[in-house]
Length: 156
Length: 182
Image (cartoon, rainbow over all chains, first blue to last red; front, top):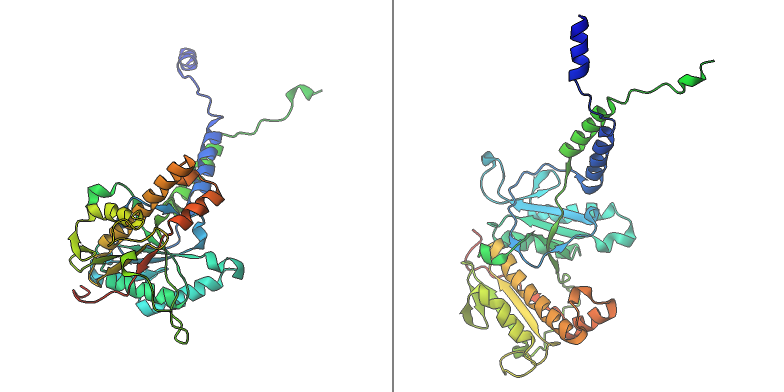
């Protein structure tokens, strides 16, 4: 027994882990600040186009998202659908959606609200155009075609 | 006396576990995607009692860009590859009356974009991007020659001057439906 104890004491080197919580907390705070809560379940495929002249959105909470694309689940068909919040919607529901969203904000900043259309590359302009007309009717004129930054020449 | 013992030590060994737990929670429930894209301003919905004035713009000031349902481009009546669109637009913007078929001055120059309902969204965004790039490049060149600075690094007043010299006027006509939606 005595010899055992002696060996153990010599062999095991304890690493000082008292700084570990600090490191992990640092990571934690980074993720808390840099990320945003996942608020909706994505039901449509949106592979956005690649463009060179992208602009970033300054205030993410002032953006309303309209997702357009083929459903991710094949049972829902392959025709492009519109997704507002968590569910599929038709074109005529866009106006109601924008008005409801706008009413959540104080009047002073309502003019700064942007609508982001996140549409799949394969979507035809007819559908996007219909959404644009709906947006014009409710005076939501600031629009963003969601796209990834990149070299355009490669995607041509 | 027991003063030599001091404050009893708290075991902080599980602190890391707790922090890891929180970290994993945030990793799972949050997203990091920053939203970027092409910023566009839509024209207001026309008021039926107060229709917009009929454009008195001279034909030469308008660069007409058409995209059909096969994603092909027609610029000023002739077929064009998308690679040449930026060059052509820049030529139009910086023409200043030299070429009689292009714009009289940069202030009056307009780009008119018209697409079919069957145009793919990708092609439409690409065309819009090329037009925007032409404006950005022209503004940048003017800024470099005048202020020796990139357009992005200009002060508010200088930037405004360039914007009045090269106003971004991309007008979008109502789309036609020739090729069909799908």
